[in-house]
Length: 312
Image (cartoon, rainbow, N blue to C red):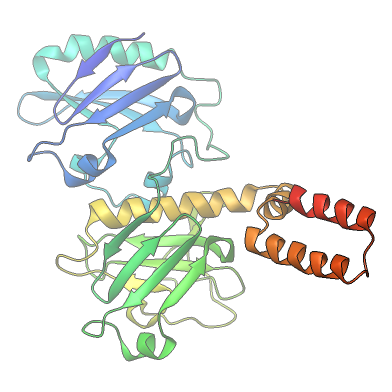
C-alpha cells in the first residue's frame, strides 16, 4: 500500500508487510503512547481489523492483535483504557469512507492463521535499559537482570530484611502487572520453581502460552501481598505510572520468553563465546610463567596461547 493515514494522536503508514504506527507527542496525547513513540506491527501479528463509531463525531479504526503477539498487551492483560490502546486510530467521521478503504486493504493482508494465537512475540518490546520509581523502591532493568532498590520511607520490614534484590531473567517464568490506576497496583516477578503460583485473587502470566492462569496454590508459599514480597514493587499515587511501569513489564516479559525459547546448545555456545577477556589474559600470563620456567615447550606454549586467544 505505502500510504499514510493521519488520525488523532497517531499516524499509520501502510507498508507491504506491516503497519508503522507513529504516536504524536503533544500535551493531549496519552503519555503511554508518547513513551512508545512508534511501533512496527507486522500483518502476521494481526487477527482482524474493525471500524466503529467513536465519540463526538469520530470513527475508530482498530487493528486487533493476535493473542500472544504483542508483549505490551500481554503484560497489560486487558487493563488498558481505550485512550491508551496503541492499536486505535481515531479519525473525524468525515473520513469514514477513507478509513473503510484502508480497513479493507489491511484485512486483505491477513494470513490464514490470523485467528490463531501467536506462538511467539511478533511485535517488538520496548528496549532496555529502563527504570521507574515505585512507592517502595526503584526498579531497573538492563536487558539481562531486574533490580529492586528499596526506599526506607516506603518499603515494608519484610523487604528491608530481605535487602535489595537482583533477578536474572533466566531465573524467571513471567511477570505480573497490576495497573497503578486501580487499587493496589504493583509489578511482581514470578521466579521459576514450585512457588511461582500466586493466590487465586491474582493471575500468573504464563510466558509459554501468553495467557493467565488463576487459582493455583503454591507448594512453597510466597507472600500473598505484594508489599511483603521482595520480588515485587508496589505503586501508589504518582508512583509506577502506566507509561513507565507497563513498558518495563513488557520488556521483562519479552526477555523471559526469549530466554526460554533459546535452544540450550545455542545458549551454551553463546556463553562460551563470551569468555571474560581478563580471565583469558590471566591464563596466558600463567602459561607464560610456565614457559619461562621450562615446564612448557615452545610448541605447547604457542598452541595453547592460540587456543586461548581463539576463545575471545
